[in-house]
View 1 (cartoon, one colour):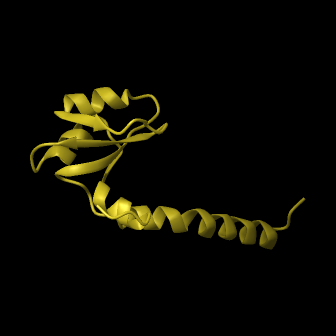
View 2 (tube, one colour):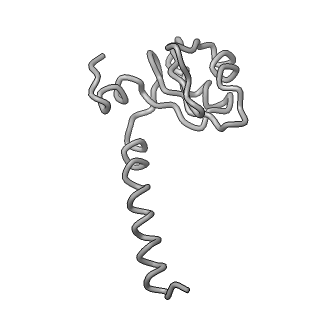
Length: 102
């Protein structure tokens, strides 16, 4: 059985380990126009969310929770969120974080 201090240390270590990548994603600006990364819950139809928002999916593959998409208008990100997206990130900024130039 773990004592209280060990449990607290383990909880803090796990929080810091998971918090770094989440903090990096939280600071990425929201996409509005151009290429965006759309993140949806697993029970949502990702292609349907993008289609209803008036956009189109780009790229050959999608991930389990997200895909790259493009759409017109300054309110494209807002339309995606209204359609069920958890988050919409600027694709150019994410590419720069990964070392790609757009």
